[in-house]
Image (cartoon, rainbow over all chains, first blue to last red):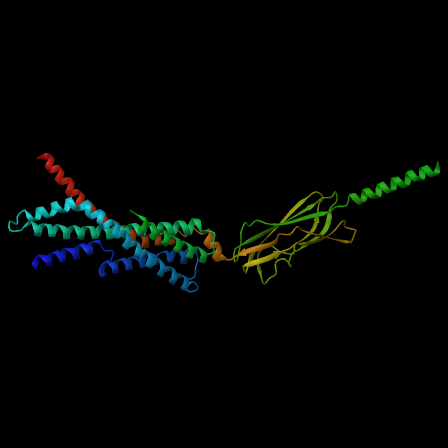
Length: 181
Length: 195
């Protein structure tokens, strides 16, 4: 019975580890970041492209909402892909870190140590994947947006410029996050 | 014989008269702008060039271009749109410059200026000539001009200040963690090698 329960707990952990779903905390972090990064370019369109906030209010709301949604998805996709790669890379180092912690503890058995390694590995991989995914997608999105808005659609009307540069850069970032292997 | 002489005489007279006609002076008037972009509430410079093409002086030259720049659309900053010159000598170039400020943006037709003059002091017949015209011009809004040509250095600095934490902060966190575990590995490997 006890063995069965452990197996089921392990399976749950494994499922959680491999699932695309993120925790509420992680989701809030992602959505907050995506909203901030989507809103920052509004400054450029307001100040440099001279788009009046009151006149383009609806465009800005729609653009920001769409880019927030897709950036959030891009963060999640990239995190999912990266997490396992990072976990494999960090395995050895975490093993050593935990082994050092357990050297003085004579009572600890191998199962406890393995559990600890697994949890720690999961934590580290989750943290690194989250931060790298946010960093990479933010940088990629902003670079795409600046290139599209100030070089490609430079001579278009501000409305077309805004909608196309936000739409396209969001689409590029989202596609790259799904296509990466 | 008499017929021949009289014919020659008539021919001579006609040549003399036709020459006097040819020797009359004409004014050529050009009108152009120095501005590459014409912008609402920014200076617009118009240059008039008058050239007396003939061998004689022209008198009472009067240029009028008030109709091209109505007061409700343009503000006159420097110069006059109705200048007068007492005379322009033969072969002389004359330049007149006016600085205006467009009050409205949009399309505007800048037509020719009208120049009146007398071919000689005694001849009171008023000659009328027209300058070249600039034609339809597009007066840009100052907002559009700023959008295309201002450097916006302060705006870019503020944008960088806002955007960089979103990139640097997550990078720093990721880099710290990566460094920590990579150092742990390399340290262990070094210790093993030493042992």
